[in-house]
Length: 423
Image (cartoon, rainbow, N blue to C red):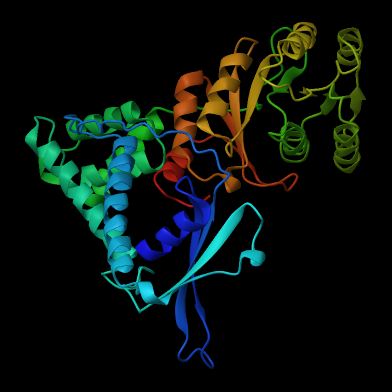
């Protein structure tokens, strides 16, 4: 490696920068006798900003370390172990075998060096000496450190409870929520049962479920006392599945609950959305009204007075577009719905979801619907969002099929998903 770097400096100058390296085999017959080659790509025309060294913060004295702290420690330890492995590999390189690649085989602003060397340490993770083995050792070390920290403080956690805490953190449950949950379980579970994995898991699930308010009877109420049909509006960001969810609700109410349903769409920005609803309306045989203005919406609602339920589909609005949100507010003011459901996609990051919650709850939001649970990576974020919006969970959807793959919100169901159950 040293000889190769020396050739890079000689060819490109002292300012040369290593861009990429890769390892492959060359020569031999049917894979026998092949030489292992390391290809190095370097350039003398790359602006690399100066790297500022930062002091690594001391480990937290908190008994319950956060996922971020664990991740940082893993990353730092991995880099150190990987550097040792690479240094060991570099030591096995024979400088006399180092050759400069054909300069015409690469771009004019970069050069590739081929370095042939003797067999070296395996880094594919198949053996304990590889990176995979190192990672397993690192994880075990971090686990031991975390347990040691918890035992050194007054808030020592039993093993089974600590494992559940790590599960919550791995599912992206906010650290303060995870700590709140395990502390409640620690107080609620008798000391003689705290080492029972099943008991602890059930207690954790119950505590998570208690943090999720749900609508006990979504959209099954009798006609409101004001004499109007039960009017439900779906709002939310673009691309979260409002139109499909509205069609699922209409089908459920019409076909399963035998209610007289009407649909209204103000999503005239997307012609495809209107056509999609028209198709669904024809299949389940419910009327669909398309409106262009708040005044048209008032007229459409007047034509639906003999219905049990009116479902209003709104156009997706970016939570950062103040003008569009004000426009949506005008429609909501005219509709005066009994329920406004904020539809959020469970595939979005926590930052995006929290931003949507912050902006849309400035309107009139009563409940939350989570869509695309079948596509979600982690479910802990949903718990964080529910706690932030502090509204009842009315429905969740688990796919695109209409009228299927929609179900009433269930705190136990969501708690199970957060703890690793399948959708």
